[in-house]
Image (cartoon, rainbow, N blue to C red; front, side):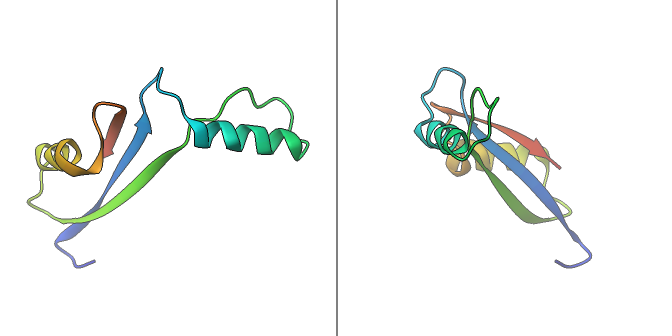
Length: 80
């Protein structure tokens, strides 16, 4: 990363109401390993972008809408 770039983090998660089979598998595995008290797990993805200083939050939103998230079933959060 050069001096004129910065990190942007995009967290993508399934929307509420969308089944999360990976999250359910993790929840089940934790229970079988003896970890009690985990009522639910939602699994998502974290995307780190190295962007130039001129990249705006609007630019990153467009990236999310067009490629990084399936907005039909996923929501996302941007940390500039």
